[in-house]
Image (tube, rainbow, N blue to C red; front, side, top):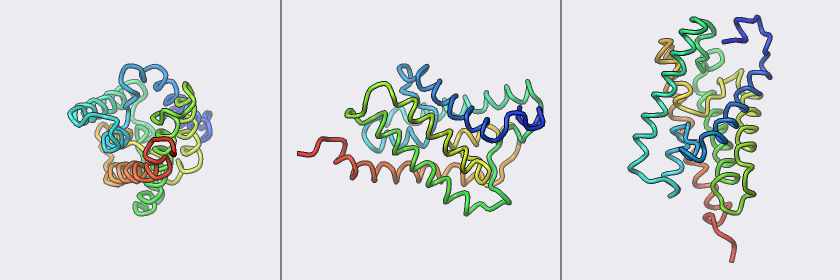
Length: 197
């Protein structure tokens, strides 16, 4: 939104850097409080992989959704109705392409989350940097095509507040599918999170 208001002063790479930097900052700021759950696809993957209790899944997804709506409302009130409120939209309306790419993006992101943040063998303290860099990198190379959401509520907030519902199904189903595929892949790659005997 700010990039549009300032006639491109931030640039696409700047936007990507901001995406990654915000995620990094939030992980280090809130990780010890909420386990850095900002994404329903990640929360569901934590649950199916045994790292998160089922009874907390729906309350967390509700809180994530509410936070996204409040953030989008804040942007609308402070900046106005510009840049589609940051809504994620498929390039040229190509929803199947965005579905595939969002699945791949979230798969990669979830592998990084497992490998850097949940696996007890990972070096301590670097998960936020690894995850934030992944978000920034993925936003840099796929943002122009899919919006690089990787997070259902990151797309839901602007859609609800801005009334832009195009391909919303993509931004819920693809990240959830990508994260679940990463659960299966990381179990195999990590010997189910345990040392090889």
